[in-house]
Image (tube, rainbow, N blue to C red; front, side, top):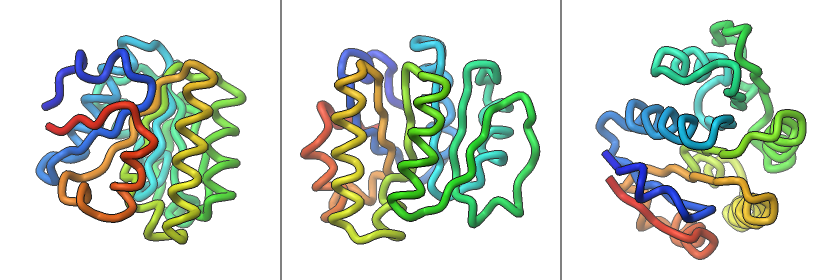
Length: 174
């Protein structure tokens, strides 16, 4: 697992995790970030927000400072976690922008985690997905908000993730 020290000090980080225990390690990282930064917005591209919220709560994250966004297309499978603020959004870039920034503008989290970033490029043209990540990175730097983008190690050699590497301050691998 990645040391939290490796993540601190750089505003925008790409974290590559092994496929084994991917979610367990992503949630552990989120919990450690919440401990340091206080409030956290967690965005899952592949799981419904309310399911992720329940899993994050089970992983030890504090509900009162946790805000979760996930794809609306999967919302019918959701588990309710009423004490966590959830936002279901579409997978198109415009929908992700509205969903993520809706939570950011309303709750002002000190850190944002987005995973798995390669899924953004699966549902959108790669150029649009790269521009979206670039915008998120610049906005995070401007507002002094930590941004941790998570991918699987096996995705590090894809064109999209290589493009994303151009926008981050640091790449960390477990």
